[in-house]
Length: 284
Image 1 (spheres, rainbow, N blue to C red):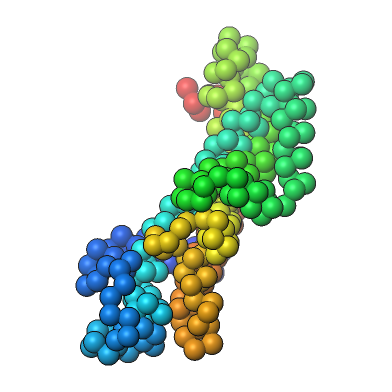
Image 2: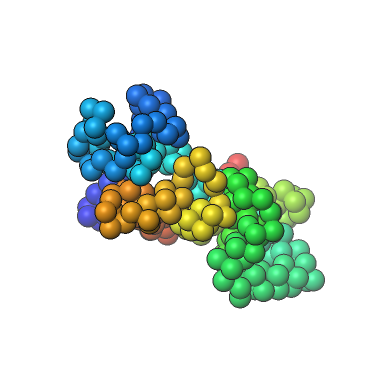
């Protein structure tokens, strides 16, 4: 348990450091990380070195002379935003659809689960590529596509939890007291059925960041000159032998972020597993 606590704190510290860097570093940087200046004097400076113009670069510069660290922190704003927004929207859609399917039952339940099963049978990356190819690439498109292709797992988890909670004693007690069906679902059943969904949404942040990076790497996600970790890796593949830091820096940022989100999700799951359901008497 003590070991798990240290891992959780380290994950939180990593995410906090990335978030703080994303907010502050681009604002205090001496140059615009999107601007192309004196390419010959600044291009491909190695990490912890000065370029020909005398400027020092923590993680070096890319082939256009732009500071890799500052661009990576600017890209973190977008990658973290897309990951969190995409996972929250997908989770919200999944919670609503899964809860309604389990509560109403019948044809609504069968239809919702049939659609979810059909979409789960198709690899998510294929769905993302098709949707991204149909619409104009951009941040809004990526978030929308992530939400539309990521709700199925959460819906199944919520449906199972709602079905299990429908027959609980506190639900029967609320029904006997005359609670209307919508209030019974949203006020009493759903709050006790969200544990698995919360964990899935937390884990989904890392998955969304990976998918966004993949789309941006392929040119179907965030478009230049706005940097994201995915298109930064794509920019660095041409100089991967002579200047590996251009692609390695955003790649390591993706690994650290996804790993931290996964560890936090595991810790949250372990914590929620030890909590008991809240009864109607405790809500009063």
